[in-house]
Image (cartoon, rainbow, N blue to C red):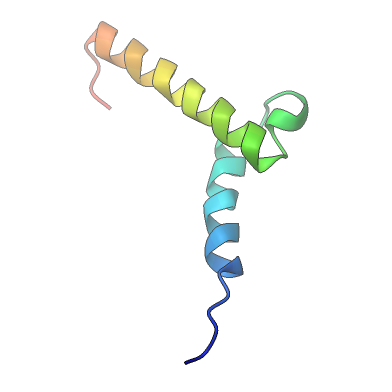
Length: 57
């Protein structure tokens, strides 16, 4: 059985996170661990605001 390398999948997932973190300050925009945490937190606040205001995402 051939060995499966997962670079393509990982890069695609990371690319999505980096796009969402565009404009963030410092390592939050270009290091995957920091960017993922920042984006998760930002999305949590974004959806909480939309729920409070009655706007459906």
